[in-house]
Amino acid sequence: ADADGNTEVVACGSLDLAAVGADGFNGEMPLQADGMLPGGVLLLKAKVGDEYPAGQDSEFVVRVNNAQRESLGLEVDSIDPDKLFVNNVKKGVILDKYDGGEPQNTVEAGQFITAV
Image (tube, rainbow, N blue to C red):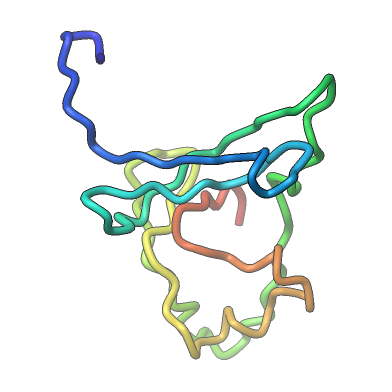
């Protein structure tokens, strides 16, 4: 229940570590609502035993050489004066070239841009 006592379920997810034989989980668990993926995730750490598994680094740097001032293909929310929230990343634009060959360094919806 929330602070007002409401018990309405907005989304849910499940993680069965025993079924997959995992020693733990550290990452994003997709949430579902009415059997559909609403696009939300839960950042979750779960352990079996004494240690949590290592997680993906929470920060990374993307350097973009954009001398032609092409669109980066980012749709952002700038309501927070200290960071930008990435709402959407369009495919096939200049930003696609700048993951440094590391897929975990790809800018995706749901992330924050903290410095430019």
